[in-house]
Image (cartoon, one colour):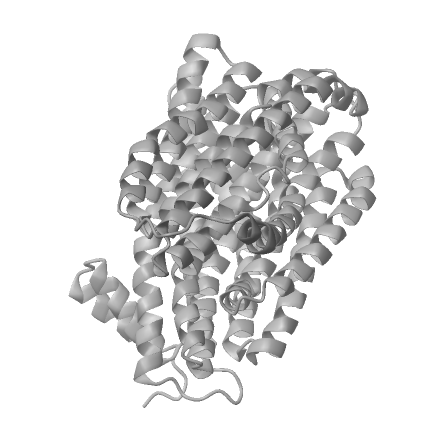
Length: 555
């Protein structure tokens, strides 16, 4: 897609890096999609099998436990990612092992202390919220921080040793166990808060145990080195670095958890748990939008890091533009469907009682689009090791989120919480865009705004088509009787929504072609990705012919 003003034409070298991102994205996307499907199946099962009150209590207690426990790991899991490869490269494997042991020791001690604190203070927190049921919910999740941090240390260490396969196995195992254990506990103990909470915590316990053989194998081949980790290194380097990362993580955790915490406190006593349930599951559905950007980001960061090390800023901007354009090209039509058919999607996936979260879902999805617009910029700044910049952005966005939640929730309820998040994402977008221009000389290309405009037009057209779907659903004849008739009607409506989804995608693609948002590099990347996915040559050739209509100044 079009290059920004003043940027050089993309060379073969730049094309190679863009194709590397595309290839890695496809592989990462496959694994991410499988993981997201399992996670989504878990969310759907929870919504269908458990009461809104229990779901709301679970998410409220989880947010409280997460917010109050953000300090307990001291950033050591993230520090492993930085220092284990560093020590390994210097042949000082003993220091890497010492850091791993220290991370476990610190997190076990702090995790036990935190669990005891949650157990003792649960009644006080429940009284603060005027929600007596919250005390038991907090106690059920009191050990979450302990076991989740142990699991995080194990997987992060394996990632730092470049054992991505083992890390993915453990991540997928924990993800699958969430679904399997909640179904098992539901069958044994029924639809209770106990089943929901304990099954969740146990996934981290089992995951941590399953990591032991992988860790043993990974630590055996580390060179011992002559010296162990000194106290001076810990206090002068690792702890300050860990504290910096903890602060950074804290602000993003505040953004992701403060809405439910404040919603539970300011939302009023009547129906608070149910309201939090609707908000939580609506935002969980919205986060499906981030699957493709996350897949691109996972491969984008190391590619950009290598280019920055070579001081090839032209290639950096080129890959950033290509990655940003493909993020938007895939994400915008998904967002259009989620906004236009928000109520139908919530009702179809979770049940009719969740349909009231339609506006919440639509607002939150719009906010995520702001985040996607500068997703590559945030990764670029991270590759340049400008952690302080990301810290500033997180601080401003986090503070804005808290203030806006306090102001908006009393008047707008869950829609106010969603709007607060959307505005916070917008603020972070503005800041990342500013710092991207300042430190990377990166400006959003014209094609980005063309894609956004195409998405806005596609949304308007989808909203105009929506009544047609409702009318078509109303004239579908009843099939069977009783429950059969109800499920058949739901299935027919979901088919119609699926048809409208396909039409929305087609409209957006047509508008993107008319706006000339493609260039020859994108066609080459599309072909390389399709060939890797073993798409038939006839379909690839047809797609190329269609895509060429969207290339400006064809030669």
